[in-house]
Length: 276
Image 1 (spheres, helix red, strand yellow):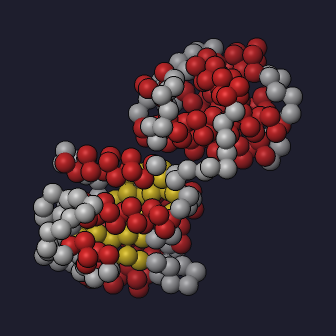
Image 2: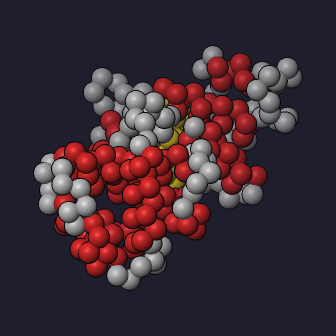
């Protein structure tokens, strides 16, 4: 589960003193992601050594579970949008340092529902970050989050799995061969023309090919596979996320009847920037 990896990675950076001040979490299940963020907040703010079955009487976990911790504020859309007044109230509440926890933490659910006014109000937190404030922005589509917010957050992709897609082993062989063949290959465009042009005759086959690539890389990202190719082993996790997002773009082009040869060329050209 990516969310577990997300928690592990953020906790690791916390212990190394490298914690970012804001995180954009793109997920296919916002409710589950929110629950995982709450667990992460318990870990980071725990005055003891956190455990899931903690019996200590610090009361932190019960306050978080009951939405009663003063230093934790969750904002949900008020109607269609998240409004400026909601952000102003948050800023007023966090104008002082936290008393019972290490951090003041805010969570923006459905961050894609921030309008221009509310997003601009939040820029104070993002452009002039304070050491004792953490922000988590949860969305099901990061591209719909206002760019001024998106560009100032550390991105995590939180996929909770899709059991409806089963990887075809024969297609996976083709996917691995293709990724291995274009990885750090200055003749990747030539490889597209000599080997991939006409490789599949049907558009639905190309869709299956890139869907297989998508789910293979997601499973590699989630550390669920023991057959990771060199590309996955050598590029960092943030770039794997970008490759996943690129493949999702490719699938949209395929479904909108884009020219396959041009789509493949675009794919290898954009892939270069992740490992050159």
